[in-house]
Image (cartoon, rainbow, N blue to C red; front, side, top):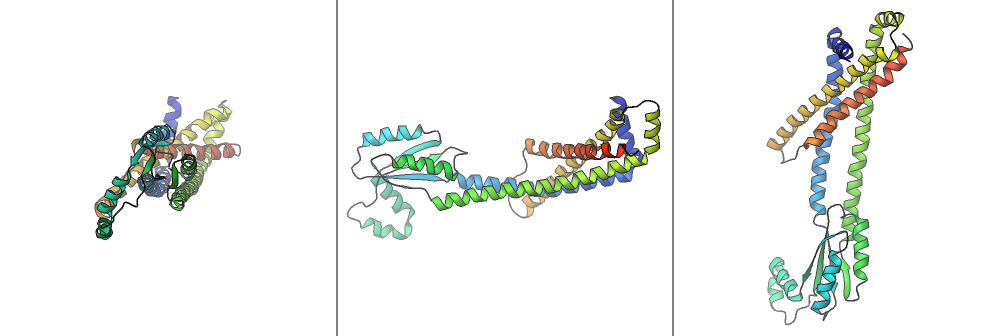
Length: 285
């Protein structure tokens, strides 16, 4: 194992320019991916904030007994998707309208009777704000005999779902594209290293070295290049985040797990690039 590590590190000394070029190219590939990741993280946070405002309102028939409403609140809060269910009486609904609808305040004060119905406002648990769960809860609410109507902004919830899907799809495509580019770059540098050491490898085979023994330093070399590229990419992404946060808009950075994932992603694609290249080219040496 010590010999493998030493051979991998010696490869950086044998071809420092090529190694630096590989690490830099990987770093900038992952940096572009990191910038897109920052956009995705902040977009997800924004969508999460919007999703938290998803609310289902069940409007009640006039004259529904308060005992029935209290029992219904408990039943609704027992739904697996529901975080809370709060009853809003007719008087509370009118008071809220007078407080929030400033332009109609004078008109609302002149009302002789309250036209607003009582309602139960339902908030969903995180992860259940998508159209499928919202529709399912709304359908169950319509099954209560004292519920007159259920509103939740169906079109708005469906658009939110489409935005989530679009963000995930674009992230997958961009991530795959940059992974392929990095694998090709690392594979090319490893192939050049194999060809550069072709005579040395031939001698090692003559003295009985197995392909696995010869391959290991190259695999470790590729993994190290990917690891270094990932670390540089995270550093560049953090610099970009600081500049954006200072001069443009308030933004969020990756959490620790996401930053480690970027470095790990770089290491994996470095290993993959080496694995795909070294086996094929060792057969030609």
